Structure formats: C-alpha cells, structure tokens
Image (cartoon, rainbow, N blue to C red; front, side, top):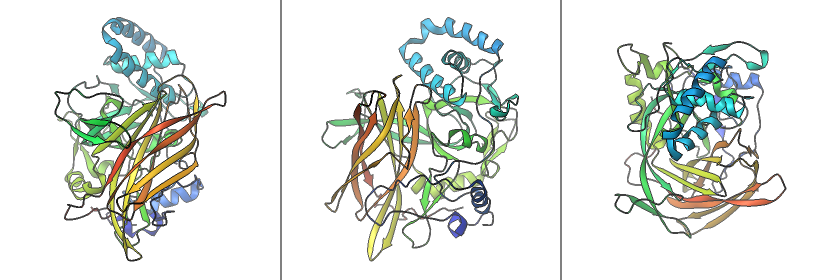
Length: 447
C-alpha cells in the first residue's frame, strides 16, 4: 500500500473475522505466522495498518533493564530515606512498578527490581534507564533516557516519553482521553458528582473521571511484550461493505495515568514507530521537546468515533483484578440486517504472590433484541496465560457483534492454582452502546 492511502485499500493487511454475524466474542486461536510472512505484511501495509495477527511480534530488540550496581546502591539509599513518608499508597504504586521491572528485566531479582524502580520514583537524574541489545547474546546495555518524577496531579503532555510500569515497554504519549472509571472495589464519596451504571445482578456502581492516554509503542520492544500484551490490539472496520473485514494499527495502545513512568531523552527520534515522525516533530524549545504535527490533530479528529475511550470497568476477585474497556466500532449491513460491532480490551492482573493460570472463559451476552447467549471456551485468544509475581499481568483484545444497537456483557474467568484447585473470577458487567445519535457513525481509517 502506498503511503497515505486508506488502510482498507490494502489487501495485504486484510483479515477476515471468524465471526459469523452472531454475538459470540471473537477469540481466535493463536496461529503464529512465519517471520518472513509477518515482515512482508507489515511492509506492504504502510505506516498506519498491518495485518491483524495473533502470532509473536517481530521487530527489533531493546527493552528496559536494571542500572549499574553503583546506581542500584544509590537508589536503595534514597528508597530507605523515603520509606517513612511514602505511606501505603506509595508502597502499592512502587510494588506495581517493581512487577513491571521484574517482567522487563527478565532474570532480575525482586530486590534489584525494587532498587531499580526506586530510582525512577525518586527523580534520580543520575540514574538513567537502560536497554540491552538482545540480552541473550550478551551485548552491552545502552542508555535510553533520564527518569522524571511521575505526576501525582495533572496530565502528561503530548510528546511525553515513558516506560510502562507493568509491561516495561518504551512509548510516547499522543493525546489523553477522559474516561469514566467504574471500579467495583472502591466506593465513591457520596458528595462527589458522579455518574452511575447498574451492573447485572449487583448494586449500583459510581463512575469517576480517570485519564488514559493514546500512545505509540516502541517497535523494538514489541517482541519482548507480545506474550503478555497484544501489540496489534487497536482494530477498526473496513470502509467497504464487508461486515467482517477488520484491520489493526500495530503499536498503538491505551495506557492509564498511573502506569506512566516518565523519562526524558536527548535523542531526536527516541521511539521507533512508523507513525512517530508523521505525528510528532522535535522542538528543543518545548518541554517535552516533541510536539504534535497538524496530521496528528487531524487524525484524532477524523478517527475519534472508533478510537475514543469513554468507559472503563474494574473488579477484583480473590486478588485477580479484571479491567474491561469497550469500544464501539460501527455498523455494517449483512444479509439484509444491521450488524453492530464492538471491540473490548481486557487486562488481567495478579495482585498476589501465588501463581495462577487462566483455564476457561464464560461469557453471557445480552442483546437489546431480547436474546441471551452463553459462550464457554478454553483460555482467551488461544492462550492460557500464567500470572505470577514476576509476570503479573496479561492484556488482550477481542470483538463482539450484535444484530441490535446495544447490549450487555458479563461473565467469569476460571483460574487454576498450583495445587490443582480452581476458582472463578468475575468479569465486571459492561454496556455495549452504539452511539446512535452520531450523524456519522465510525467508518474505517481516515487520514
């Protein structure tokens, strides 16, 4: 596909969904393609879209790694000095970041990870984050930037570089989204102005405003996170009439404010992504020094109907936290009927030290037309991920279609403990809304 043409015109990036026009979630089995065919698809699809693949990511070789022993020692001193005033909330935040460092650092010990993250949380100007060039081959570390203090209040600006505190990848902020977070584990203050959503078979849950960011993922880090988080999870419908043609934008993600570990870099192109120079330009007079081009603003405005993040649902069962983010994708006609499409992103997080493995999923899907469907299956997207203290999180996206303009979904995930016992984790109920009031429904990718 030539640069700048709509992604839907590229046959190379086309994927036929396995859905049959029913409401069952689409969670196909993982079918890794060869590296040769994967590279060919990515190259032919231009800077904006690639063939949706469940196989491993396939570019570059750098990921977050621990600093030198001297730097770790300095971070330890600072961490002890701050321990008394950090409080429970700070300790929980650091533990989450430590888990991300454990995952990103591969064989890093828990103690080294904590010392490493302490440097990030203490604005350690002399302790730069580092990335190895293929640690399996024993190559040396390289500096990627200097940590900054995470923002407790306010938003990160467009162009902010960051490390993901859970998955460890490098990224850059494109723009923020203001979402309504419905957290079934936290009771909202009565005096706070908030919206509410009634969950299936449970009490009313109050929604609070929460900031998420649209970000680009550094392509060099994709191979290191592809088994824990899909790097081609943001999908959209084709512009033409085929109701089952889906496309993906590789290396595009949604990141919660608390998952951002900001850093700065003197590199004028610190992130490797085909859209980086198309969306951002370097301006040393600005902070951060990467500012939005007109193309980014236009792209956000034209594609916000299917990009926009509005509601986030969260619930914890037996220390397994499930977060769900639904997105309306649009409506297509199929066999003389309207088919409405949604994608949903799910993150599973183990908040305990016990190792557990996801074995089964059980969905209940209610349509406004009055139908109630039950879907059971092994694992999710062809995988049965293990959640441990070292690798506590797994994130994936899937799709659902209804022959009605709205509906609801809820269900459970069944996990297995090391002793063979099982337990069910609730999936928070969430609405599937079609935004019928919009004059122009979501329709493919626009440039």
